[in-house]
Length: 350
Image (cartoon, rainbow, N blue to C red; front, side, top):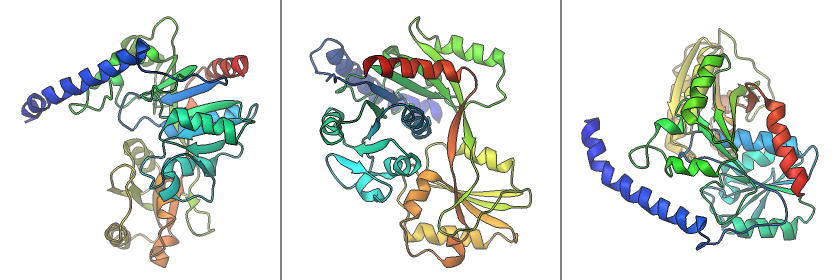
């Protein structure tokens, strides 16, 4: 069955790859314009369709840089209903800003967040409306070559290395592995914290970064559950039964983490960036009510939390049990070397 599927999808993947390769060639030869700007622009992206952990990495980078410089994050604002350039504040809504930009705006204390589908226009508007900005971070901008970033950070998930993937629609690659040559820094994300040196060496050889490229490994770091509606703090223990509700591309690391903490985990999985409906809320309520344990919680992601928080018709006992699990990143090694590269570029080009 898989072989038949591959045969049927192979022509589409070849056509898609050829179109993307032609577009990249036009940019490489200057036949399509990449705009440069007189301030540092750092791009964080991937060549894989989702699931690499861009948001926690952008949040980490913006948080660290904003301790020493004025930072603006520019995102597309995927699935927002608004158009054009918009600032995103903690009081914004998902429909106007998108879920990930709103999540970042609520997580970052100093860095400002903006959305614009046209990245070059967005950077110009940031320079006009926030003239004290000293560094711009492009969220998911690796394929958006209308802006020529001075530093490109490429992410690939440990669970699905880009070197083991195939072009859309056969796999999840947005472009061929030739695109990795544009990266200055490559980060293997969602790496197990107990990874051995031998395994990192094997992955390094597989990815084979160029002489001017640096390779780093990061893992996800889950924090204490935060109540979505109530004020009551709760902890996850071996006696806790959890209903996990996710609308993200790769929930497996979170599911594995919770299974290592809680007594039991029931998982309701929805598509990435899912807009929850009344029918979904009914399914969540039924699944939660079926859990017989007296100590039970509904856990969701921070991104799903910003969407669920805007829903008003959630039953009281469900609302009181809803918590989101913040997630950050931790470097397996060489964090200060990474930050020296970032601050060295940003400081030199400010």
